[in-house]
Length: 335
Image (cartoon, rainbow, N blue to C red; front, side):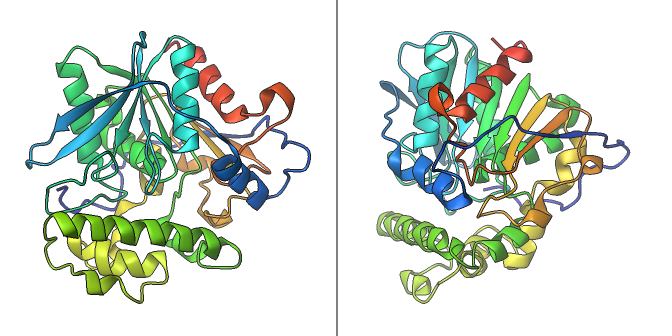
């Protein structure tokens, strides 16, 4: 289990990142944050390619699971899913298939307990568990399959950006992409608890409560009982009662302050693309970083529309996001 982490990035580097308008146009009839978000999540029918599973041992005796595209060859691209996601999530399955078909070797890194089996350690996962990502990258390098790039979605994007900021010039990756990132977790917890966004919050909470109950049926979690899940009606309440005490934070506010990636963006040294929509129903507009907060290696492409991990475009560019990710990997000479 990762120890609680410091809230501020290293100082001394001048942040001079770039924020530009994304070249994305929503499909006709799918304008608006909710149509974009729901269409990409519910209407798309996509399966990952045939999979090979691998268990990554962790120093604390727990494990992670990697799902590889069977038979794929080329530079390794690690995919990090979002909250309660997996290789079956449409965004992960779609990108995995696209990468495998374009000459890369993709693998989805499942956060603890999000793979085929519950994890066995005395913790779950959280947005600042960068030690698990570092351990996975070290494992891949030690077994002759170093990751050339990584792509993180939503919470996985926060985790990836935070790792890159922590690692600075020591980061092993050659390129990174982060999509629909909750840059400021406290602001995003407030945003998702308002208006129609509460529908997404309710859906996530159902899955999160189910994951905790599944884990408790296997083995106890220190200080956590199934009864504590009753009455939780917000992500903030879940993080305050479950995530924070289980992982050594003083409460939700402490967790959000210390886990958010925003303070670390100025320390990133790896070429990094961030794709985000201004109308993301999960992310408060005020959480979107300004150019002065970004390192020179970071390019933030902001779309006026696109929802949360949506970006459903027109015609042959229907799945615009996957095409943009592949273009960036090619531009940075990853493959």
